[in-house]
Image (cartoon, rainbow, N blue to C red; front, top):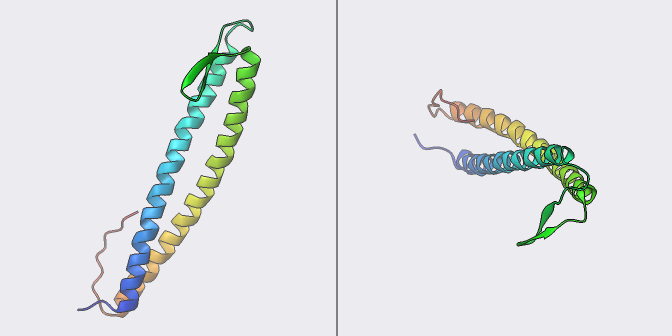
Amino acid sequence: MAIPAKIQNDLRQFQRLQQELQSTSQQRLQMDLKLREVTHTLEELKSLPEDATIYRPIGSLIVKAKGRKEVEELLTEEKETLEIRHKALERQENHLKERYTTMQKEISEALQAAGVPVSGGSQG
């Protein structure tokens, strides 16, 4: 049995939504890793003596920092930025998951109403 054009269009939109959800999830996971790395670096930095020699990256160079406090401030600022971006990605991911679930249900119902057999398997 042929799938109606509207449902075919919905399926294409559903596939795009699925790709967007996967991409957003991957970005959030990468942000997770960066956030953990910065947090760990800050913890390690705090265990160093105040007068320890510390180097930090600037572009493709590694230069001597003025002091531990300078690096702590930079890392704290970076951590705050990462936390904000991470929360935004979490919100976006949750919104996409809701849309995904709703759309999955709507397509399944539309296919059943059109008399098209629907498999029981779920992706997501």
